[in-house]
Image 1 (tube, helix red, strand yellow):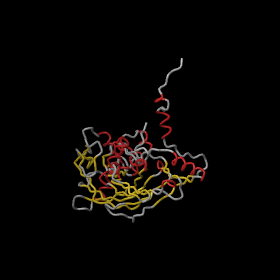
Image 2 (cartoon, helix red, strand yellow):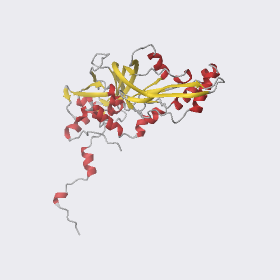
Image 3 (cartoon, one colour):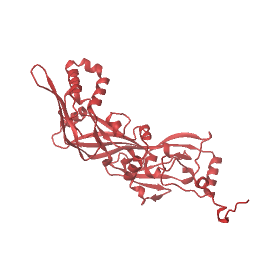
Length: 362
């Protein structure tokens, strides 16, 4: 018996076939292409003062295909951090091994607002120009495994608290801070701090859907942006973990410094109390958090019996100004043969294609 199929359904395609028809086929390297990495410097003048825009090209003429997912922007800049406490209540045994972290949860949040220029045309007015908010949302839903693997780009709080070196930011010891702030007489006290931040291009929301960009076919691409110092966060590092690491690394120097220093460190581990409650989370720059402002051993009796004193006070950390010293785009890409490029051109000229707004992580 012959099954009747309505004429209107004979030309219907399955969802899978439709996706294959309209999907962008990746430009694969089959061994005929040669990879290289180029460093591109900005068109705007460096160093750049506060609130100045940076303009930089995102492609290189030596590449036919730019690998967006392997390219990144590197910024070096110096910020003047402001503290309303000098942190001068630390004994020598503790201040070099106690830290605060100042950095970014995600490096892409550093870019406050951007505009793209494609073949001389300005691309703005879209929702993607709210870069800080949308990049924050996009990076929030990224898998934790990816954040752990992208060193110096993401700062998970549990990694920062454990004094992990793979985070995006700087660890500042209280010895370093107190030495800089000691000569200053008026609050808030300023401390210049240098930062180096790498921002993967596909962490920017507007590039999150791209893997390769065929610049020989689609033309030049530039980005203009400002940085957002308010995106920085700070937090207290667990002193038990950081002092233990400091002790292990500097054990030889500590032993040669005499028994008093070792006894004070031993006192710290024996008397540290969970009642010493500091702010145990990120705090945005410009806000106030309860930080450890002093750790010292206080003598109770003439015989040498000591007690551990930990001062915890509200401290505000803010930014006065910043200077962008260097901006470089590290572009990864490759040349392609004329045959391959002509095939790609024919593909885009003969078939309808869609550029997705966002890549979905599975």
